[in-house]
Amino acid sequence: MRGEFDWIRDLRRRVGAPRDGRDTVRVGIGDDCAVVSVPSDSELLLTTDLLVEGVHFVLDGLRPEDLGWKALAVSVSDVAAMGGRAAHAVVSVALRPEQTGAFADGLLGGLLACADRYGVSLVGGDTTGTPGPVVVNVALTGFAPRGRAVLRSGARPGDAICVTGALGGSILGRHLRVEPRQDEALALVQGNEVHAMIDVSDGLSSDLGHVVDLSEVGAEVYEDRIPIHDDAVALAARDGRPAIEHALTDGEDFELLFTLPAESADRLEREGIAGTRVTRVGRITRDRRYVLLPREGAAADSRPMERKGYDHFRRA
Image 1: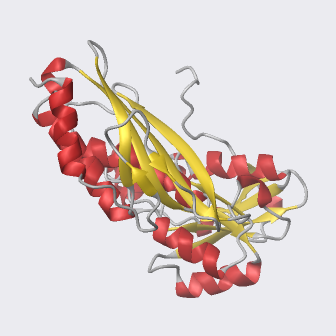
Image 2: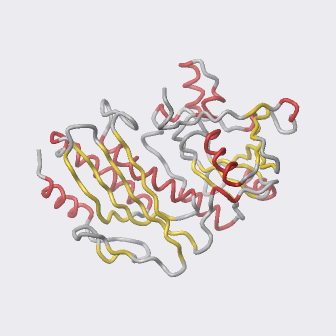
Image 3: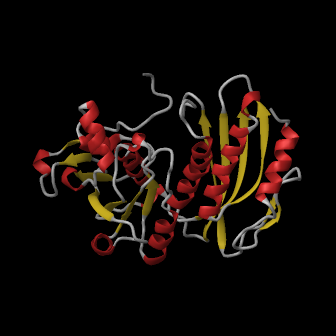
């Protein structure tokens, strides 16, 4: 067992001097607040994610390094979904007394590994003891080019709907070692006219629904074009649910889902983005119908898209 201030001293030592690729950190860990600046050509993005033991993770068999990595990575994914680059993290943790030694060190190691991978500066936070569940909260800033943050509300009729990577079955392990598509997002917005974007955290059918609602449009999705991850196939063999259902509704894939002009989608399907596969899975429509088709052009066989993604407030 270790005291709070001993742990904070170790934290400052391991984090080291403030580091930031654009020299925006003036004061990091140690004061009442961090002091950072926003480059004049950028807008500030802010996001936060809360992970609670028993809701988002169970400790049995969980490496604390994986928990630390995921706690930051899911917020990096949010910034990427806006077409931004992650910058500064403030991390708060609530730990039981017996977790203030090796567990806390492992948690910090995972946080710092993710921060190093995605160019994030850890600039502050808070610690507290708890008799109850472990809680990890990350608040993250990011930068997007001024006036060019990509919103969920920009989808236009005629846009192609695309996703990176493959979907479904993340619970078999990918949900712990989240790989945010920041490099892909930055390359995507730099070279293409992206109208709307979101990360697939709650399931494609649910997250595309957010885009449809906020853009006040409709969408048709082609079942035969959904990229199904091998994990979804393996999970289907275990639980009997179709692999396509896993691909449409499983959460925590953290792939990018975006809309853009059809001609750009054709090129991205051929070339990919930042070394990652891109698949055109549907089309934005002017009417407000949200439907699943067995294949493109099979409108007569369409059926309503069921939004079965994860909902924290939905009763079991």
